[in-house]
Amino acid sequence: MNKELIIRSNSSAVDFALLKDGKLIELNKEVEDNKFSVGDIFYAKVRKSVSGLNAAFVNVGHEKDGFLHYHDLGPKLPSLLKFIKQISTGKTKDYLLKNFKFEAEIEKTGKVSDILNSNQHILVQVVKEPISTKGPRISSELSLAGRYMVLVPFSDRISISQKIEDREEKNRLKRLVQSIRPKNFGVIIRTVAQDKKVAELDADLQQLLTRWKKMCASLSKINKYPTKVLSEINRSSSILRDIFDDSFTGIHVDDKGLLEEVQDYLETIAPKKKGIVKHYANSLPIFEKYGIERQIKTAFGKTVSMQKGAYLVIEHTEALHVIDVNSGNRSNKAKSQEDTAMEVNMISATEIARQLRLRDMGGIIVIDFIDLASSENRRKLFEHLKEEMSSDRTKHKILPPSKFGLIQITRQRVRPEMNIKTKEPNPNINGEVEAPIVLLDKINADLNKIVKHAKHRKKKVQLHVHPFIAAYLNQGVFSIRTKWWWEHKKWIKIVPRDAYQYLHYRFSDQNNKALRA
Image 1: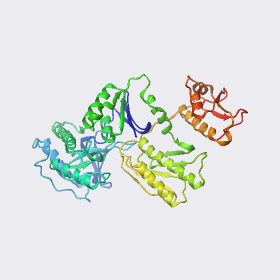
Image 2: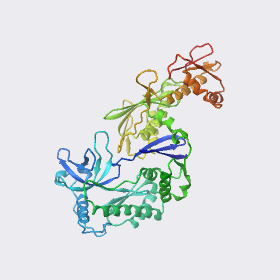
Image 3: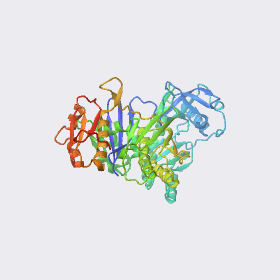
Image 4: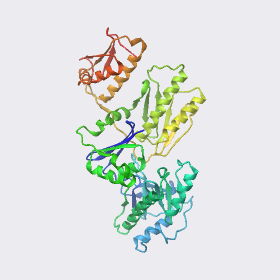
């Protein structure tokens, strides 16, 4: 398995495309003016508390106030407020909390109005970016994420990722972290810490403590509210921090400034892999070079085509996402309807897991798979979907198939869904049509089915298309039509048709009789 990270920079944003064996599995965008990223910490002001919601609305500088629920205050809130006051008044410069005396914890079932007052200053962290008409979701339980661990101030707890299953390794990591952890700081050990030495863990911890001390030092200099006191590390570094592993074979960047930034961070977390970072200086746009633009056009529409004629229909509502699985017009060697349904469902489960990561779909997702009569097949499908979803870094939960054959997924939503418009203006009439590049995938899929169909093998195949499409298919010495000949060992005659609309096409035999798969 080879992984590549393709980074494209432009004037307003930076795009990150993660490829696994050449296939796009994750797409991220860093917008320059995004002031409310997950992980950012603000010194904010409480606007008002609402008893009915048991929550407070906090001014963090966004047009919509941040939402702070009582359960997100954290039991150590009185200690945090005391610490902030001591720093603001200059009474303490002990940022490492060595001699800090904790206050009593707040009750689990208390009321926010008893804890917070209007115009009160408080330190909060963004846990969910503003989405649609909602402001950011915030918490006063602070945490700083590193490569191997997450630092939690005002805590003494050591937690270990559930994905580390080896009990001996868990005990080893716990012992190592306990030996280097400063007093009154909790630590969450991440999955990537597995098999790491104490020196690597300590270096990561020291970086987090340095960030914490810088943030504390800035609190005494604040003269306006709200103020951002700590920013999440830039998007390129945060993505590398979360996804980078030994399977990466290349990181390609089209901007020299961003290249140095990536190299510097990689020097810190994996110096031996620094050589895989390359500067892309070709005149052809980087996303076109690596086939990403085509994959985006084919993956982000309402309908997603898959192998063997199957396809997905993805609908979005305010409350949830709905995915419908369809077998389509397909031919296969399956012996029964059950086998056909099972084959399509397994293909779809793999693609759905990819789509959830690619689009960063969050909230409730309902999948309508093709009905399966066998309970064993339903179990196999469920286990396969869980396996495909296991590489998803976002927290999620999958429920077994219901009586109606539906599978429900909840997936944590921390930022707006990646939504890319794939339709383009219709060149013939008003309205919109699918992107022309998608047309070529449809032609390829239909051609594959026709040449493999037993009753069409001895027939000559003609493709009737708009003259513009015909010219594109015949372009160059190694044209698309030439590639078809090498692949299928059959010469496809291309017939330009002036009467055809831009996206209209038809297959026929030498007698002009329509060919269908």
